[in-house]
Length: 320
Image (cartoon, rainbow, N blue to C red; front, side):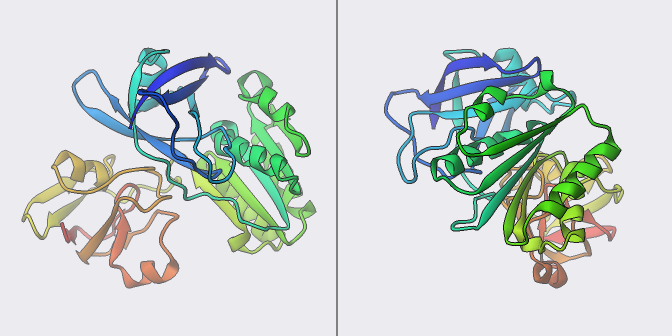
């Protein structure tokens, strides 16, 4: 879809809100809270990058919406997405956008909802909180950030009726761990957690929830970056159909190597959440680093998420 940017609003020194509407007028396909869109952004060298951004605004269920609102943090190690938006996209700019997808949906008819955001992880949780407030659901939101000045969308959160919002700003790492442990301990066992933020923050909340006796199936999360793991080193990949052999160096993902070679593979979240970049492995041992595949898929050793997973063996043979 071609969308026009109708509003750009600075939320903090590093976070901008972009309001996107149909370039030709009309309305947009609806979505459920937790959904994201993929923008195709041109870089200065002629390349185009695809980047995922969570939707902020919560539509009425099943109804078309007038706009897609996203919040974008200018990342210090931007790979071209946030830096391009902050530097070049203004009101009136045209952007290409894929329809919304959702791998982080609210659980319907749940007893209670506990939303836990770290930094820019507030974006999908704000949308969730708006929907839960509208439905008068039992919901609480915890917002962790380095300081209040960098906490985006506070005014939106303060305007939510019926959702208890707790802010946790300026805490040390140890204090964050203690707060997360306390949240897990005080939450009734039938509650669903929704966690979004840096990889280490998500892992800590999952760990404390497990320690407090919450089943993993009740802890839902979405990463904006891959989980921190040690690098598995370089390896080679042979594409069985085309016969092409590639070398994947230590600091390049398999997905980027495949895309650079022109292989027909999709990309979306680039954090191991969505499964868009799944490839079939015919030979080799996979180093799984995703959050998408089931344990039985991992045990079978036939599928891998190319965006984050790597090879334990010197050679992978892919059905590509």
